[in-house]
Amino acid sequence: MANKSKFKNILVIEDNHAILDVITLILQSEAYKVAGLNKSVDMMKHIDDFKPDLMILDIMLPDGDGRELLGQLRSNEKTANIPVLMISAKYTSETIQQNTAHKPNGFLAKPFDIDDLLDKIEGILAGKNF
Image 1: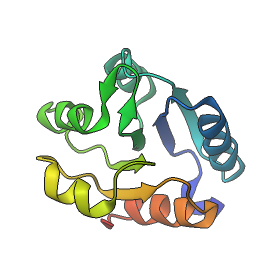
Image 2 (image 1 turned 60 degrees about the horizontal axis):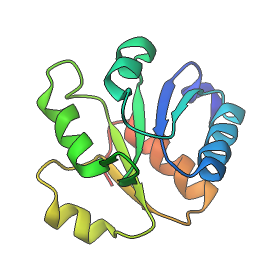
Image 3 (image 1 turned 30 degrees about the vertical axis):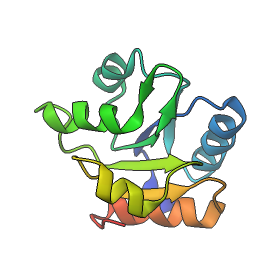
């Protein structure tokens, strides 16, 4: 599995430091390059600098709503095609699909299983939607 993921950049935006640390460690152990933010304020600058192949985006952030951030990404020509895996403890896949103008490439409810996280990331990077 690590051979396919080598050198892929993943930007994680998650306000819970423990969850951000766990995701970062897991992805680094799978040979991904990971950058993490705990708020969305510098998201576009980090995207320009880091050039992520995929983003993991929490819906409930202290300074923004992940669904609105997804809309910003999809509306910007430079970021419209970056795959996004949304995560949330409050929302479900169904509510995201129904109540979001812009659809993420995948959704994962918290708490999540590590294998599910890795499977969704690999699938999204391979061009699948969940």
